Image 1 (spheres, rainbow, N blue to C red):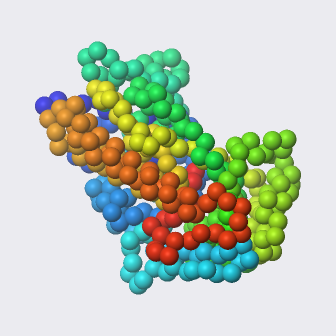
Image 2 (image 1 turned 30 degrees about the horizontal axis):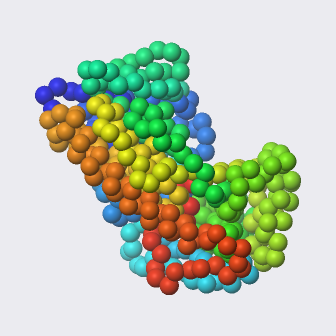
Length: 385
C-alpha cells in the first residue's frame, strides 16, 4: 500500500491477536481495543486443539509456531468415548510424534499472542458500542465513553455478540437447542482420582441420546467439564443458578440411571455451575461488502463448538493480515479475504452442525449413534468459553 492504513481490531481473542501480530511483524501498526480491563479479568476458557491445516498455519504466519509447540500438550490429543454405563466404546490415541492437533490452554495461547505484540498495542478497558461506515470509505468507532475515532479499517473480532457486525449484517445469534453447563476440578490426580481415570491425558465424552458429559484435561492438574443436553434455553426456570446444590440436584435428576462414576462428575464439581447456552449464526452468513469494515472468527461465523471455531478464527486473522499486506488497496484486500473466508465458514458451519447432530441426537434413546468412521479432529466442545 502506498500509505500506511489506520487499522483497529475490536476484540483481543486469538483471531484478533494473530491478525495484529502478523501485521506488526511486517511493519504495519495496529490498535486492538478490548473491553476487559486487563489480561486477567476473567477465565479464558478451556483447552483448544490447534489443527495442522488451520490454526497451526496461522501460528506459523505469526512466527510463533515453535513457541506454541513448547507450550502445547501433544499427549492431550487422546480421546475416550463412554456410554452412560461408563463402558469404554473407543479410545483414540495420538501416534509417536503426532503433532496434527496438540492441545493448549486457551489462556496460554492468548498470553503467547499478547507477549508477541508491541507494548501498548492492546487498549484494555476500551469497549466499542458501535461502528459506523463513513462516506469516504473509512469507519468510525463509537466507544462506551461516547468518544469516537476514525480508522481506515475496522476488524470485528469481538465474538458472538459483536458490536461491529451490525454495520454489515442484521443477523443475530439464535439458540441452538443445546446447553452446556460448565464445571471444573482442580488438582484432579490427587483430589479426584476417579475423574482423572475417566479423562486420561486428553478428553473424554460419555453420551446417551440428548445428554452427554465431557471432560477436558488442562495444564497443572486442572480439568474443565461440560454437562451438555438438548432442551429449552430456560431449563433452569425456577432455579437459582447461584445455588450450586440446587443446580446439582436438577442435573442429577436429568442424568438418573447413569453410572455412579459418571454421576461423580456432577457430585464433585468444585465451585459454581456456569450456564452456557449454545448460540449459532445463520448458515450461510454473508453480507454485502462495506468499505473499511470486516469480521473474523465468531463475529463472522458463530457455529457449534466442536473444535473448529477457534482454529478458523486464527486462520481468518492471519489471512486477513496477509491480504492487507499483499494488496495495493484495502478494498482489494477485503475482497480477497472475504471471497475465501465466507464460503469456507459456511462449509465448516454445515459440517459442525452435522457433527453436533451425530454427537447429540434429538432422541431420548439410551443408545447413542456413533459414526463408524473416524470423527473429525476436535469433535468435542473444545471451543467452549
